Amino acid sequence: MPPKTRAGASKRAANSDDDGEKVGSKRKAAASVESGKSEERSEPPQYCRWLMKSEPESRFENGIDVKFGIEDLKALPDQTGCWDGVRNYQARNFMRQMKNEQLAFFYHSNCKEPGIAGVMKIVKEAYVDHTQFDKKDVHFDANSKPDNPKWSMVDVQYQRMLKRFLPLSELKKYHLQHRAKGGPLKDMALFTRARLSVQPLTTEEFDFVLSLEDEEPL
Image 1 (tube, helix red, strand yellow):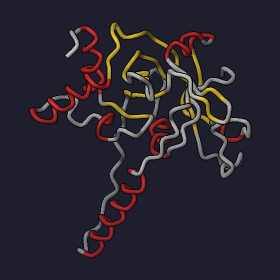
Image 2 (cartoon, one colour; image 1 turned 30 degrees about the vertical axis):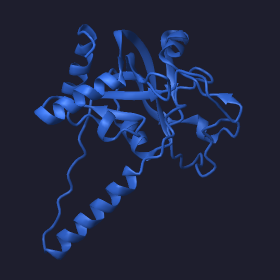
Image 3 (cartoon, rainbow, N blue to C red; image 1 turned 180 degrees about the vertical axis):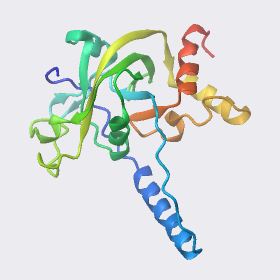
C-alpha cells in the first residue's frame, strides 16, 4: 500500500440518495404490510465494471493538496495505489462489491474539463481505510473506531490511458440521445446518481463508453 496516496480526495461528496432510498424502502414495506402482502427481499444487483472519480488539479484542504489524477496513479510503484478517503455510504458499499481483476474508469472530477481519462483494475478487494483514524488526514473520522471501522478502500492498478479523453460534455450528449431514443447510456449512473464518487456500470455501458475512444468526438 503506497503511503499518502490521495486517490480518495474527491470521494467525500455527500449523497442525499442514501436517505431517499431508505425512506422509499420503508414506505414500500409499510404499504406491503397494510395490504396484507409479505415482501420478499431481493438481492442487490451485482456489478462488475466501475467508474471512480478523483481530482487531477491541486486543491488544498486543511493545508494538504488532495490532487490525485491518473498520472499520479501511473507514477506510483507498480502503478498501484489505495483508493482511500471515500466518505459516502453508498459509494463505500459499491467498493465493497468490487472483485479482483474487475475494471474501472478513472474519472477526472472537479476540474476544468471533467471526464474519463483511462482504465484501471481492482487488485485488492475492500479492506479498512486507515485514513479514517489519522487525525492529520483530511479524511479523519472521529466517529469511526478501530474495533468497528466505518470506511473501506480498495487497491487499484493503472492499466492504460484512453486513446482520447472522453469529456463529460460528450458523454452527456450520448446519455440524452439514449434516454430519448434508447441506448446503453440512458440510465448511466454518471447522470442518474451524479454526486456519487464511486459508481457502478453495466458491462454494456462500460463497453459502449470504451468504444468511443475510437470514434470522432460527438
